[in-house]
Image (cartoon, rainbow, N blue to C red; front, side, top):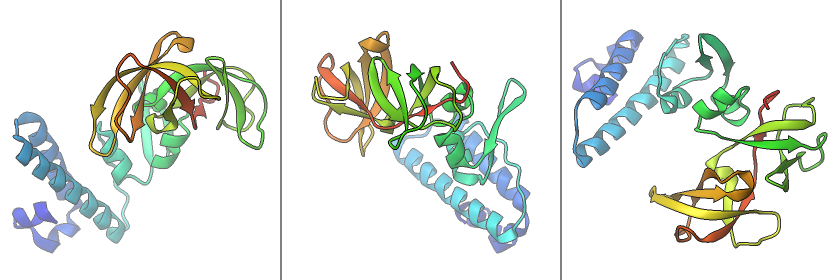
Length: 231
């Protein structure tokens, strides 16, 4: 472990998990309180990743239960077997990281875990072979939902990787307008406006150079989750 070795702790620190947590906390505080140049930031990111990997390995080796409190959702998703999300002093949802990400129980959990985008929709009926038939902005799509979800007005959680830009007018798409884009290395993060959703802005991941801002595009919805009981 890089931090342990730098601090002169060595393998004995594996018996002192509280110390490891303190080191992780110190590393996070250092990140927040000191301005670092690009090269130092890259090194610190690599260091934090190394700490996370060693922390997970240590926890598994000890077989102990750890309670780790954090506001960093990337750390929670990376370190935890189970995550508890609190909202206004109440337990909103508790489960495996994949469960909270793919099937959030509330709108708050959907927004908080993975920056879910919430859109209004109408659930048209029960589950079919392709999923639950749902209308979003006049477009009929098939989404995931909890068994027993009643038809009617619902709220859908969309993730950036659920959406796809297509040529304007493509069948099975919403009419949309391309907005700004930010290059993220492996993809562009593109904002799009959807007139049929009240010009609501959504964001998606695009693997090739994006359309010019203001361009007419089609927007395909490949997946989505209906928030249980939410309207």
